[in-house]
Amino acid sequence: MKTRLPGAVLVLVAVLGMSRAAYGGQGYVGQHGGQEYVGQHGGQEYVGQHGGQEYIVTLRAGQAISDVHQKHNTKTVAQIPNKSIYLITGGPVGGSVLQDLQNDPQVESAEENVQIKLGSNQQAALDSGLANVLPSLLNGETITTFYGTNVLNSYADQPALVLSHVNDTRYISTGAGTRVAYIDTGVDPYHPALSPWLDPGVDLLNNRSASELDGLSDSLTSLLDDSLTSLLDNRFFFLLDDVMVSTLNGYWSGAVFPPEFGHGTLVAGMIHVVAPNARIVPIKAFDLYGYTTMFRIIQGVHSAEDLGVDVLNMSFSTTEYSATLRKAITDAWSSGIAIVAAVGNDGREVSGVYPASYPHVIGVAATDFQDHIASFSNYGTAVSVDATGAFVVSTAPGGRYAAAWGTSFSAPIVSGAIAMIASLRGHGHADSRSIVHTADNIDSLNPGFAGQLGKGRVNLLRALKNWY
Image 1 (tube, one colour):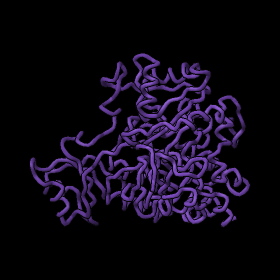
Image 2 (image 1 turned 180 degrees about the vertical axis):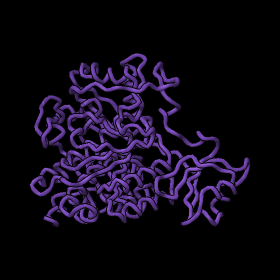
Image 3 (image 1 turned 45 degrees about the vertical axis):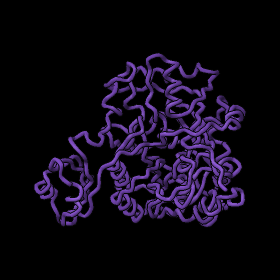
Image 4 (image 1 turned 120 degrees about the horizontal axis):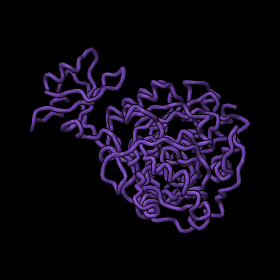
């Protein structure tokens, strides 16, 4: 019988202070405790913003969107470059627009443009045993050299890397010559550990910068610069999302930190610590409140294909099925891109969780330091492999480091591992099967979960030896 802790996304973060360069900041316009924000969720275009329900429409070959608009009284909001995929809105009031579009012989597919949320609306109970051991495992002062940059030793030499045999593989591969994209909230582009390895990336929100700091007000960025390092002797523990934000907001009167601030930088750091010579390509599709739309995700997958990356990481999950996203993923996979996704953090058995459940996607569950399924991790047929997710140490905005847990941070371990293999095989030949089929079976360590944890916890050394 399976025994689970209640529900969810559990991300404990201990921010370890280090200096960083100053950032410019865009003001937000709105009503959020004295700070200014653009729109309800930080400037993102959301469902209904353009007047009514939005639809994602893919045309059949040789058809014109103008004909569709004329028949259905719709208009174009956006188009995915070089694709016959459109975001449209409109239609007759009270009419069955979606059904009419689906029945249109000029239309290959049509679906509603639904909202996607990064993370869960629930939070799991904090593992007190792990919280107690964190201070002894995290050293916020010892620095080491890591592929040309100075980083925290707790980041470069952490238990998650030992369990996956990452440190045993440096003589075989470092990911050189590969590029790993990830769809998320962006990145801290000035983080000393990341900046030498970052490509410019793509901003699908405002067509400006993939920086996760683009949008924070000057007052918030100055708080990150000056104040955080004075807290609790350079150690600051909080739960990411609501608890993190309420703690920050409570310490600084009038400050409002967006709830998903830092997520993208944490993901980028895990890719880098596994594949240190791989290039990292941020695709910013989620705002700092954790919101995006299905159209933006589809656009992000096509952007990764256009950029010619080797691996695409998606550290999010949804129960919303999209035929258009499934096809975009199939197209990206056919072009030689390995695709990895988190299976989610609701602590339950799942089958229809996306994008992890789509064909050609490697779904990743989270395990702890004893190879037990993490209390918050989903499990089931959506899982291909497992990787440590309770906990990891990664990069955080402001040139800092953080300890975090969640399947969001297990997935980039697998993405980095695939990049290590792709480095040996050559561009266009990223092989996710090697990672899956060389994993260590951990069913015996997880009574009641046999067949629910994929092929097991990744073993990068075994995977690389197949090619070395």
